[in-house]
Image (cartoon, rainbow, N blue to C red; front, side, top):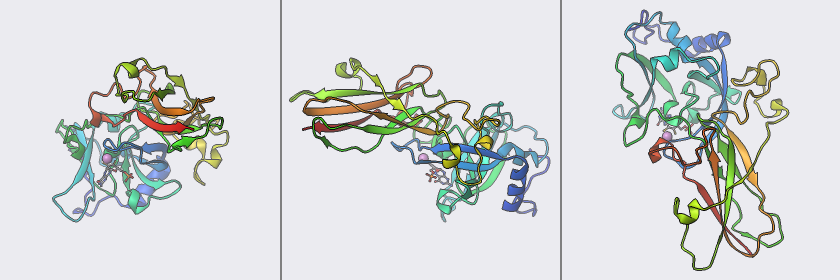
Length: 319
Ligand SMILES: Nc1nc2c(c(=O)[nH]1)N[C@H]1C(S)=C(S)[C@@H](COP(=O)(O)O)O[C@H]1N2
Ligand SMILES: [Mo]
């Protein structure tokens, strides 16, 4: 239980001005990719600003017999349909230094959060897939229940899965003429286990050959070549929204304003490949991410719904 609950009924509920005031004292700014567990490509990336959830809970005094924090937001006008999520007490209150804390965001890309993105207040869980980042946040409750109550815990989703390290392909032409440059690119998301590299496999499709299937003999014999990863921007003020200094963004050095690691965890970086001197014919281009534990995408996720991250393929012809 809470020593001092903040409730609508009691007239003590936290409102937006009070939350923003709390944010002046305990601000967090974080660059985060939003990726759904069930959708093949990331939904986007932005600079979120807000106040750690632990600071809001601290307003309620010491807690007793609490194991999880449950929270939910507006979903639609049918009161039976709810979208909810949860975190463990420790994840919320005892975030280790160096790790980003779950927070109540009230700004996105330097402006109030648009309605579509979950404004006025959205709960952002930096390390998690989209389903933990509840839009139109309305209610936070503490419980002694040990179970995740997440809407997404149903249907074989893993409610504790972290963002998955994975590479995604940009759209590209289906035909190139021989002798001209071929440029293929995409985004790579650095998940919990970090990103060591993105690599590609260019496979020439011989007439009449069987289609390559993930993990078949051809796939297992593939030779993967490293792709180029974009370097960090030299001038972050050109990338970040006006009014947000790189020095105040989580994971950036407060002295130099440079990222502490590259690529930044839980956000996306561009990669590219420029295959040269391809003879006319049909080709399949695949790209995959390798994490810092040397797992190549889609490993090591045991269920698809722990973060959809199938290896992307682009088919093209050189004429
Ligand atoms: N209130 C509420 N929040 C929600 C959802 C929802 O249906 N209702 N969907 C979640 C899921 S499953 C995802 S993937 C993200 C999508 O975030 P976006 O709309 O900003 O891309 O929002 C999450 N937050
Ligand atoms: Mo989702």
